[in-house]
Image 1 (spheres, rainbow, N blue to C red):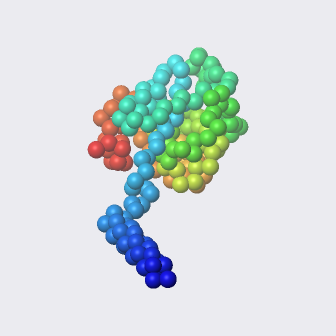
Image 2 (cartoon, one colour; image 1 turned 180 degrees about the horizontal axis):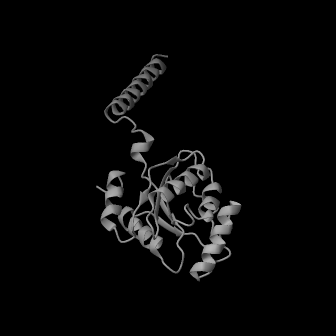
Image 3 (cartoon, rainbow, N blue to C red; image 1 turned 135 degrees about the vertical axis):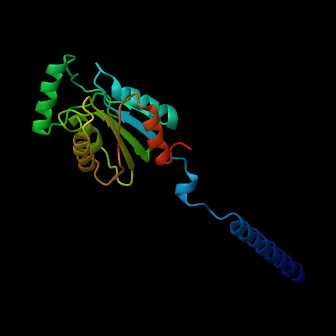
Length: 199
């Protein structure tokens, strides 16, 4: 009987020591908040008219600086390579608020909490294919960073595109976008630095 009581006492002491050790280490090394410990997963998605490739250049530079994954949106029905013909198609899509199909649309982008979205300005706003992409996912809590360029570099047109992105990316945190020429690597780098992507 004494031996049994002694064994129970020893076990009790061991259990107490284990809990004391766990408690001490929790105190010394508290769990860090999830957003501080998890690495930010970044996707750079863009649509670029094949003839100019300016948005592609911006996307490639952002990918180079951030190390994110790169995705070029490919329309199921390619746009004409002729400037005027492409403009006619883009205008019709804008007027109809169309959502052109995407040939390589990912099943999910839930593994990303940060999404850069790049596009040229078409008819004073973003191409409608950008709406197709954004509306296909639940972007609640996702950080969205639009970036764009155009021949005229009209800021009012860019603001129109930003409004379109905000409406299409329901639930997302749509940050102030980047509107600059594709050759302005210094401006792109400044934007990335200001938003914490580059030190």
